[in-house]
Length: 365
Image (cartoon, rainbow, N blue to C red; front, side, top):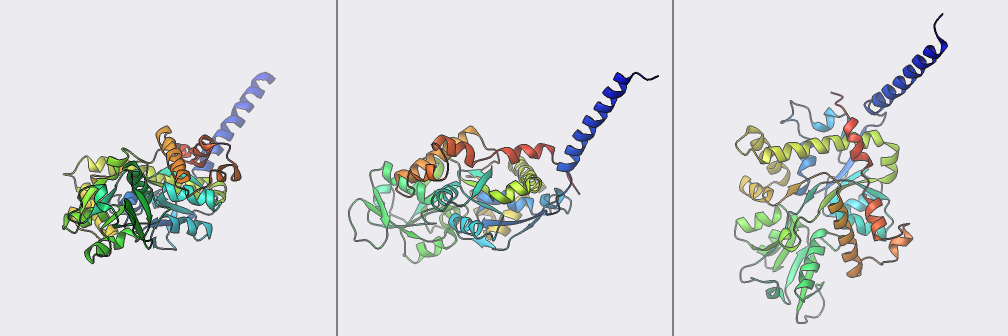
């Protein structure tokens, strides 16, 4: 007769193994809904990982999104700034968006736009560019600088840089006063034309637009953003919170493609003699509609990353405090949205759960 204890133990082992196997297979089976509607910024080379993940030329005629079982669509097309991405999320036109961290913070707190940061996209990669004859921030006194809008990281960088230099920033249209820079809203894709026509004296935007204007002599760089704030966080991926919670496997698969795209980009940038490097440049040129020289210069100023680190959370706190200090967000909004403190906000607004899930994701193709 077989010992009953042995039978029970064996049965328990079989059940546990079955549960573990089911859990693994469950994560690696596509969900019934594997479609994801994505928003992104027009020509923004900060967001090159999305372009790479959606391209087939470097990955044996299958995109990384396809490799991991995600069908990505872009119903809004390219958007002008991060505020527009957040508005598209609020209107449920998209499920996931690539944008700068400050507009995500601004709309989360001010408009109760219920999103969650699920990954980083890049650090650094913006610049303040100015016309000939302007050599310091003080030379912009009573002159006009274009920004992508108050919700953008570029606008915030201008505010911080001016404030540190003892200057004020106010919207164009007010009476001219000394020691003041005047800003106007112009999307980075249109800033070069505004510089050429004399509509503005300077601009702050994301790459490749700074490089595009400076390499042809339209303007020169006053400061790169890393000179204002070294290694500062920039773009992130955010998701509608309800969508993320109800489609966790889909989000994990999307992020697996994002992680792999980042790894490929960083490896390729360290091997500029490779065929992959030429493929990367071709992707960047096609997306940004800028030539190779502009793209190469741009890539030298962008740090590609996906990780949500303690340094990134510290950056979120700094951004949020700066938005409060500038009067763009009321401090009371933190408690109104259910956060006990700035630390609590930075800890909960960026959720590492989905990135952690990518460790168990395997290809479906």
